[in-house]
Length: 423
Ligand SMILES: Cc1cc2nc3c(=O)[nH]c(=O)nc-3n(C[C@H](O)[C@H](O)[C@H](O)COP(=O)(O)OP(=O)(O)OC[C@H]3O[C@@H](n4cnc5c(N)ncnc54)[C@H](O)[C@@H]3O)c2cc1C
Image (tube, rainbow, N blue to C red; front, side, top):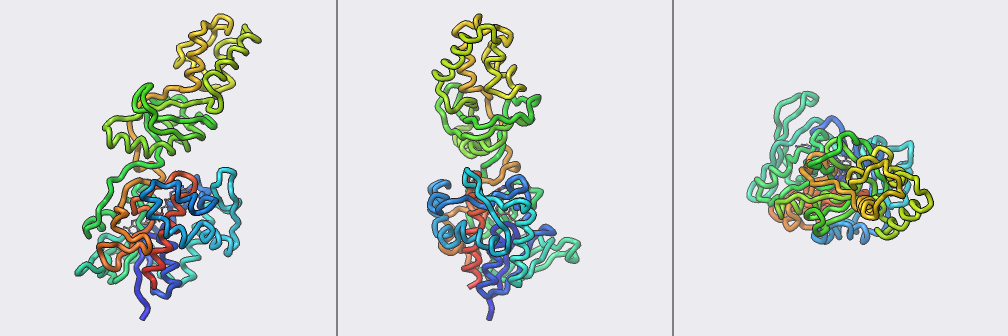
């Protein structure tokens, strides 16, 4: 007799899990609380969907924290980036790799086209998809899965229902961007069944600052190094190189997202927020920038301090930078005391952005924390506590950096969960 498998959550991990379980011969029902699959995939990569990352799986694995990397090893080898791309390529979607290794669908294809393709991918395997079906609880009897409760949206007649199932894959994702359907539901049921939840923390999230620069919201700084220190002039705790975006409440963009998890960890452990600064000339040392400015002053003594700084920052930031350096912008270079010139250089090499005040978990691309990896078998994604229960995707305590790593973790763990539950 064909095994019955219920997959909860039609996001990245649940889609791949449902298809794989069906390929293995199981009768699969996919319960998704939204009226469509993959809402979070739809907004991924700014609507372009950074599908995965190029390179060997060993390099991809190394981007995760050591315990996560260890856990992901079998899944990454069973279902790699190439395996996922084969699915898209076989269905006519071309992809390309950016110089930084991030892989996207080739335009005009975008995240919407990816979701459409993956929806067909699940449907063509005969998976029964119930849209608008929000699971409200899991039932286990004598340590073995027995079924799931779900409440139906008006589109499926409303009301509650029980679906008996001896094999259940939970793929309900994390809890960021709750409007996409990921409201952390799964964690509640799984802790009720005895699983341990590693405390949730922001990862890949914007940083709110005590002294944000709302007037400069929207200004982007290209290729800078954003550093976090334990205090002003204190020990550096983390850094990220890339673009920095000033927002109403603080900073965002790849650099901010890149350091968010370390800053959140430090806050949780030390009960203190980090102090941020940005190196706006990361390829040059203090001395090299100093020499450049001195040469400029010598060659153009009438140039003002504002004009000296202008080549290094967007026009809207010149005044802010001068204020931070304590230098009057109209002062001619020839009249700038050496101390002031050095202060300008120091500000370019470490523009003080002040204290972090908050990291909004719900605005992150992923959350760190989730079901403890010790309680899940990495070879099968099987719960070590409850028979017939499988977990995959962001519900697990996994959070990679930006670059397509998180979707790859979802595709790979989803495939393994489907492979084991469906066989
Ligand atoms: C703005 C943004 C941009 C991102 N960009 C990228 C990117 O470009 N590349 C990348 O690698 N990663 C990106 N990520 C991260 C990536 O989207 C996630 O890591 C990935 O989607 C996690 O997959 P998942 O299947 O575990 O969860 P999800 O894809 O979140 O899917 C979970 C599904 O479960 C459903 N669900 C939840 N609760 C219930 C319930 N009670 N009953 C039924 N269904 C339920 C949800 O509706 C949802 O469809 C981005 C995230 C965000 C928020």
